[in-house]
Amino acid sequence: METPFRPREKLFEKQKMFQSVNKFVYLKAPGDKITSVAIPGFLAASCLIMIGRGIYNMSHGIGKKE
Image 1 (cartoon, rainbow, N blue to C red):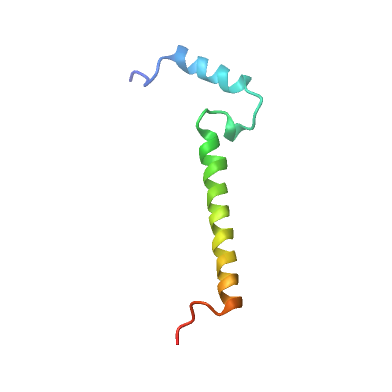
Image 2 (image 1 turned 45 degrees about the horizontal axis):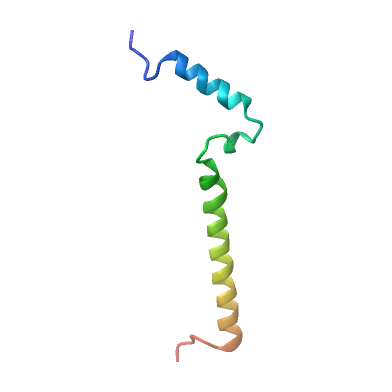
């Protein structure tokens, strides 16, 4: 039989830690806020900035090819 990657005791400790946290499942680990909040927030903000810039350029006729 193959040996497990981690000892069972460590696995049980992790399970107890995750089960005791009263947050959403995808926000339980320490670094999860970066991947599930910060990155989508940055993408949404940059998209809004680019859309606003495009609307401004269209309304003022900037950037047209002649």
